Amino acid sequence: MPSMIPKLYIIVPCYNEEEVLPITSGLFLEQLRQMTAQGKIRDDSRILFVDDGSKDHTWQIITQLSQEDPHYIGIRQSRNRGHQNALLAGMMEARDRCDITITIDCDGQDDIHAMTQMVDAYLDGSQIVYGVRSSRDTDSFFKRTTARGFYKFMGAMGVETVYDHADYRLVSSRVLREFSNFKEVNLFLRGMFPLVGFKSTCVYYERRPRMAGESKYPFSKMLQLAFNGITSLSVRPLQIIMGLGLLIALISFIGVIWSVVVALMGDAVPGWASMTCIICFIGGIQLSCIGVLGEYVGKIYLEVKGRPRYIISERTNDDQEDP
Ligand code: UDP
Ligand code: MG
Image 1 (cartoon, rainbow, N blue to C red):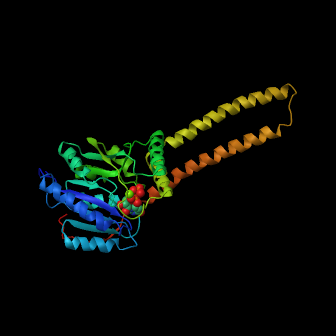
Image 2 (image 1 turned 90 degrees about the vertical axis):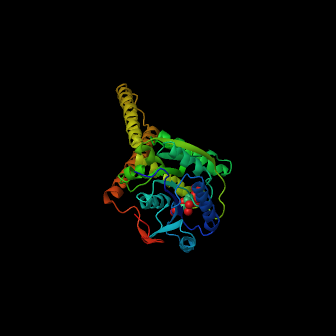
Image 3 (image 1 turned 120 degrees about the horizontal axis):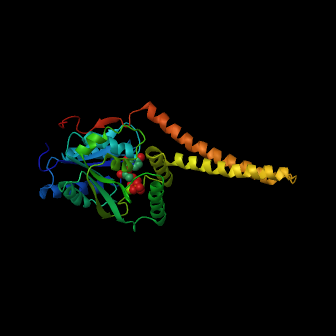
């Protein structure tokens, strides 16, 4: 039975963030202190940095922070594995050490103060609290439209996500214990948590510009994340190509009847252009459908190998912490 006041782990993935970490780390601690003072969380709550194999001084900064204040702890991935894997590593590390976790980016874009409302929602009985951006005014036009399109497209492809929610989220350790039975290596966390179920709610906040440093999510990575999300969580693309195949079969059937009739009437013309068009069209459709199939086969290949989803190479607190 967890005590009445929950112990919180704030999980912060960091990849090459030496510029922003010195600014935001203090803000996280301040927020932790404030929530402790308000009696919302226990004083032995922690800020857990997950260094995702940074190539700059991020890990040194994390180690230094952990020496300055016991609320800061850190783990380090053996190499860069990406945001989703870093989050998973953090959540699995925290799972048995606390009552609730909040995942948040380290760049200060997500309003740190929304954590108070998230914890309130947990105390009101929600096991998952999704942080949702109430506006995107500070994102560039390009980022805003592509991101919006991304959520719409995901929905059309059969992936249930919370609109405008990224990975700023409170998850209780009870949910995390169930979540650890989701063994897939292709991670799309924001689409997976709705599948776990439990009572959930949303908290709205304003998205701000990055406090320092540059985005580690270029358009290509975003696109990759979207396609990974779709093919990991939905088979709708397979259903769509099935439907497309049936439609083309139907049209072809009509075409066959038509051409037989024309031939019987002795009207057959050379028809080179129409033949070429049909061959090219069907060929293109077939290749793209095989591509979609291949994408799923590739996913199966990766899942079957079942390689570890994260590897922790270092810890700041090397097991002083009670598990
Ligand atoms: N990040 C990570 N591994 C990566 C890329 C990014 O852990 O390979 C972290 C990054 O340090 C940040 C968060 O994921 O805390 C979100 O990245 P970013 O702010 O660059 O993305 P954006 O907000 O521009 O979408
Ligand atoms: Mg960011």
